[in-house]
Length: 512
Image (cartoon, rainbow, N blue to C red):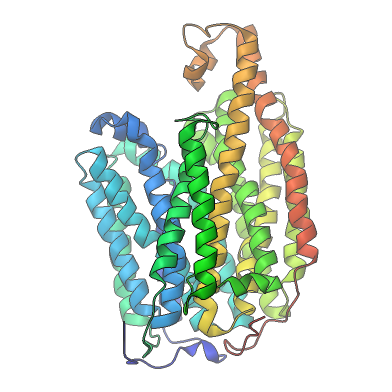
């Protein structure tokens, strides 16, 4: 694979931002928002989608196909961006995402929808990674933090806005617009990016790591299937889950062997020897995977079952977390740019997060909802101090020629941590809830324990409704208390994160 140098060098090596940077940044923010939204926007539309397309048994794959393809694509985009340049790769990823969105809206059955969602994911995973790497190409490290902060907050915003937007579109228009909404925004971002982004296309001969990529895809697919099917489609001790677990381990070991020998490894194992990369990646897996996603995944259920709010209202009540995240992400980004140091903000965030999780574990069904909102806002504030400052630390620790690979590897492992974390929390929550409901010993007004909905809970007699509410509270909140020691491991790691001064330009970062 070859390409030619047709454009001027990336301006990230100097102190001056490129012309039209405002338009470029807006386009990158829009594409990151779209790619993050599509992980969650279908969640509230799924009942309508599967009903219309007759696909209840394949429902989980509508979400899983996107996340799986995006996760596999992340390290590929990162590595190729370093090898052949990022501009054309970004435009290609955006085009694939827009194409997948349009086709998903026209799907006539579930296999078509799942295939088009996977196509979306192949583009979406690249948008998340290459957008951050393009900022690294265009903006000197010292100035970069103030631009990376809002990009990190986009993930939190999308996690809350996705289900709300999907539900509103389904109720007021047609579920297909949950995909078609990407078309005008994606095309506009594509046009702006094509006209404004000027980056070098490198003249290199690329010996791509095809075997490593294949083994990585097998390991990730098996792991995500274990997390998705375990405890739901199959018992955790079933042959299917055990075989998938074995395939995950074998593929991961073979991947490590191949990467040690590859000329251009997809994820260079020497990066793990870099203390900034290894510590920042572990903190991200713990803090974001267990902290943010556990709350976002299960607090809406708590709000609906315990407080009686609707699905839309429960989503809106997560806005304080997004507000806290955006406030601290933007503020810390500006301060990091001025001070040239990031560690203090990461440590502060990792001190705040376990406090927020612990406070949430002290709630009970009688707690005012404003108290719950205050606690999740505190948790969001902690996450805003951590998320993009970790990415910035990783980018600062490697030379510009490897910034895409470093960024994608960090995000890749964070995505894996989130998938495993949500699966583990979900399994524990489901088992505890099943035990608590079984202890009540009733048919819940004609519905079985597995068929309880918020509407059914609200219709129950007062005494029985109180027992069900307590069952949900007792099943979930102690899990948050159990997460506190895990998050504290991340806090301890934050104190060992090297506090390297941010470079004034984009070049000459130490490799280790």
